[in-house]
Length: 305
Image (cartoon, rainbow, N blue to C red; front, side, top):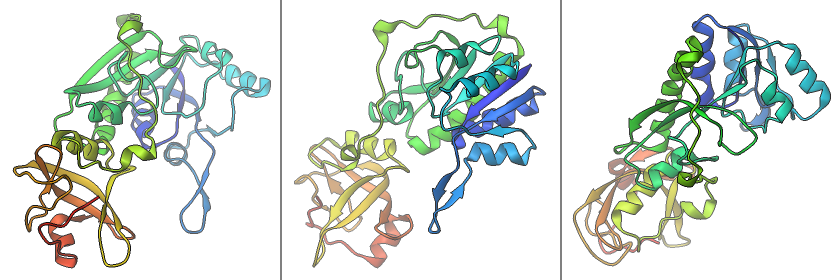
C-alpha cells in the first residue's frame, strides 16, 4: 500500500519501521518539528524524524495541518491510508478524509477504556489487570473512532515505561496485520457508555501521600515511572530533599504513615508498607536502594513527607 506515517516519539518508531519493512511504500513521514533539548538547547529532531531520515524517507514537520496549503500537499500524496501513532497534532477533517482508507491510529489502550492523552499511565494507576493496543479508524472525536483490531497484554507489575515499549511493538505488529488484509478487520463501533478518559498527568499527582494504602502507592510508583516519577521529601539538616521513587515492592510492616521502619528503608503507609527498590536523588542518576543507603543511611523512625 502507499501510506503516510504520522508520529513523533519513540512509541511511534516501531510502527514506522514495521510498515517500511513490510514493503509498504512510505509516501511521506509527518512528525512534530525539531525541539530544543540538552544543555546547549540545540534543535533535536524527533525520534521518528531521525529514524525516517536514517532510512532515506521523505519527512515533513509542519507546526499545523490547518492551512489550505498543508492540506493540499497532504492530499496530493495520493495515499491509500495514513498510519498514526502519538503524532501530537489534531488532524482536521480534510486530513482525515484524504487517504482512500482514512487514517488508522495505534491507541495504547483497550478502547473505549482510557481515551485520551495518558492511557498507559492511567491503566497502571487504576490497577487494571490488562491493557493493550487498539487499531482504530480516526474521526473528529477524541479516540472515538471505530475499532479494527484489539490486542491485549497483562500489566502485572510492569511500569509505564516498560509497558510503553511493549505496546509500541505490539501496536506495530497489529498495524502491519491490519494493512495486510483490511477487509479481514471490519470496523466495530465503540460503546460510548463504557468510555473512560485518560487526561494528562498533573504534577500534583506525582507527590506520594503516605496516608494512602501501600498497594495504591506501589501503583503510583509504577504508573509514573520513569516520568514524571513519584516523589517524596527526605528530611536533612537544612531543607528537605526531594527524592523520586522509581520502583518499589509491597512489604510487611506498620507504623505512622511515612515512617521508616527498618534499616532496609521499609516505609509505613496508611495501611501496609512498601520497600523502595530504585530511587533517584536530586541531581543524581537513578540507583538501587542499597547504593542509595550506602551514601545516605536513613535511621528507623525517620518520617518521610
